[in-house]
Length: 216
Length: 207
Image 1 (cartoon, helix red, strand yellow):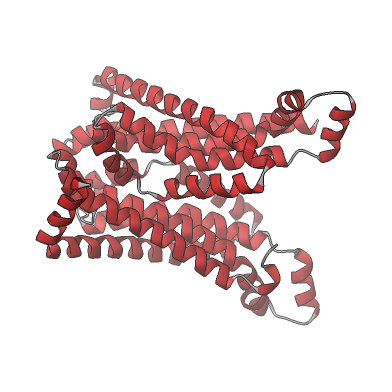
Image 2: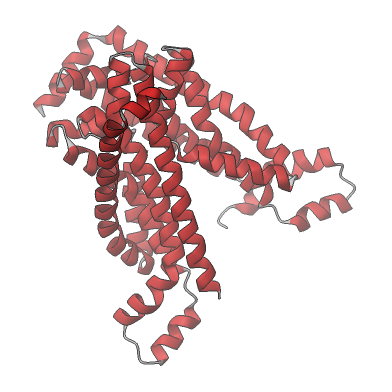
């Protein structure tokens, strides 16, 4: 318990440093998620109705999904250098596969009869996309965003190794100096951040699920 | 590239350590997840608790988890392996349970009609039929464990991450490249091989 008390004292002694690191961590994770979503969701929707493109996209994303986060961050460093921007680039790349795979799965999981019925009612392709496919695929897309968010928050800790800042700075410094209180000041908040994001995305996902699909 | 070729022995040692750590973690995780997954397949309550707890463990950021273990077990390989086991549990438990639950009730009935007891039904019917789904879980867990091992070099566990961290510390790009690319190739190769096994297993089940 005394270690926790020491960690608390460390935190109380460095409030500005902590708030900056927390701010950088949230900004880095949030921005990477937004950039990845802005690319992956349209790409997934585009590929959904084109079997060849979908096949290629799934294969590339599956390979991307297997790459170790730290390896990707480390590979970016010799190319783009250190700091916030190279970290953001690497984290955005890491967030792409789960979002694009789930967008594709969501779009392709829609019952073809539903789309047929919509077409029979005289809906245009545009209307079918926005009023039928998008709301039905959205819960699955959200599940992808949730996976990506957890991955990005975890990856942003590793960004400390390439000078990206964030809460990982406390952890790496704490490990380097074997200063447990300092290490906890990074590790505990980032764990809470990740659990909080998981919970929030889970709650949102349930809210945006159309009533007809709930409990299925 | 020249650094990689000239220091191939150094890369090979790191790669060997990486594989040993990952395999150890995977074996321990499987030994824990198999009985829990079997229990979870039979009971919704156990399923909810097991997935809930292991899901929370999975959500903890990698480096934070390794750091949180330091006050308890210090630096080194034990620390890394505990973290990896914790990260792999959710997918392994979920897939063992899903695989067993996916076995058709008719098949179980037929086995029971042939006089098989619960133990033999589990070993000779349920687990073999669940194998493709279980291997799919092992595949995801293997990729996770390889990825965590890279980070675990920071807590002195060894492996390919060592090259990356040494490279970063001495600003030596070829070393970073060698460690990072070898780790990527290892992850892709393991994922591909297990995908192939999974495919073969599901083909033979379908036949």
